[in-house]
Image (cartoon, rainbow, N blue to C red; front, side, top):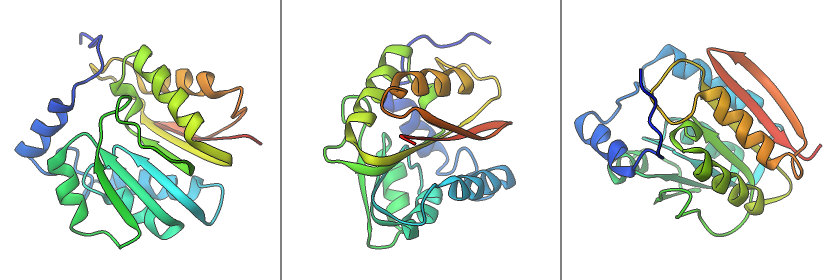
Length: 192
């Protein structure tokens, strides 16, 4: 399988959601259900003031994160996915169509969730996303990352994406807890 060399464009995701509103079976897959539960369990605090979920898709993980956040901003590159996600969410969730790194949302957050998104970036864009994330993270905040470890044709593997991101933010977030590292890598980055 030949690996793509450039960041995956937004149209790739939009076409997937137009063809099938749940192309990765987020609503029905036992793997996804278990991964989402593990992600919630990996959160280092019971409550967050302001969260950011990057790549929210159709909002399945969003619905699990929302009760843990006073406010949650959920973003995705696909307008079709955002429309579907809006249908089932509580009022503390705000949605926006955004493509990183160019459309990184303004403001600051005490939780940033990057689930199954970083391997879509090439190394340069991943470095920009890392810099923007750490700049937007409030003191004492946390970043949760989760990536499938199987083979894809994306610019980066799940492990490479996680490692590059963690290395890029290590000065500010030196505490790296790898919660799970089989099938997918789930980790929490924090200042202590």
